[in-house]
Amino acid sequence: MSKFYGMRNVGETILVRVALGIIPLLPRWLVLRLARGLEAGALRFSRRYRDRSMANLALVFGDELTEEERRGIARDALYSFIMVVLDLFWFSRWTIRRIEKWVNFDVSFDPYFQNRPVIAVSGHFGNWEILGLGTAVRGCPPASVVAPMQNPALDRMLNRIRVLTGQQVIPQKGAVRGMIRVLRSGERVAILIDQNVIPRQGGVFLDFFQRPVPVTPVLEALVEKTGATVVPVYSRIMPDGRYLAYGGRPMTPASLAEWNGDWPVTRHCLADLEREILRFPGYWNWMYKRWKYIPAGEDPGRYPYYARFLE
Image 1 (spheres, rainbow, N blue to C red):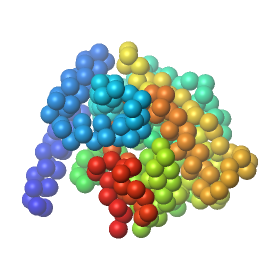
Image 2: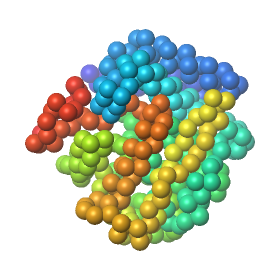
Image 3: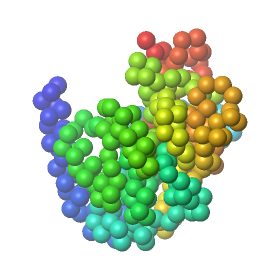
Image 4: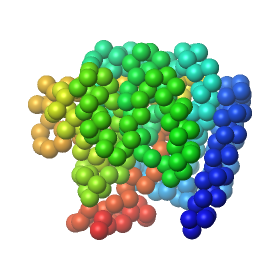
């Protein structure tokens, strides 16, 4: 098995090096067309992607959408995800010039730029990678928490791209201390809220589209210890290949009084992400196993086919 993974790592590394040499040289229109071609091929040959995406869409939308409508959302979401990958490569050359031309910030993003310290919270929605590159070009780089990849060489290459414009990378292990240090210095950190963090890793179960899912509890600790403003942030790719970056509803320590119960900051961010997914469902990563773990006492019939009880 280790030999297999070693060979796969070598293959992945070679493929990424080739992509880094070719994709940045392509005109923008060809990058968009390439993404559409890859999306069509992936949908045709990846039954696992189709099944997982359709199950997640059925969980959220039920009978509100026809099967064909759900398939259309799955196609758009896969295209959006492929653009995240391709644009990591495309923006690695002539980065500042391309960011200034192809990434536009809506006025709703201003709370991120105007407040310090700030916790920028997003999800696997649109292009979360472009937010780090783009805000850094605007002079407000975040320190982003990044989970390590299985391929160390690939991990190093992608992190080199992430820091091109001044963004910092905080390793996932020991990330809380690093984030507190950054926030106490009056700077900004970025977190993705829609990842599975099970209880033995410190996670807590909170509702996401009316089903409990395991999430990180780190937001509460960061706000309590640093007094940072929490700003939900998103991006969407437009038909011409430009990105629109915009913000959700900010949360300050003073506004915590508006919420009853535990985990108010995390629940606020989950609710904001839910609203954005419902507004623009074709931008969220539906193939992710977001409802993978079923807490004790929950009805497994309310969860997708891939879910299992948490041991």
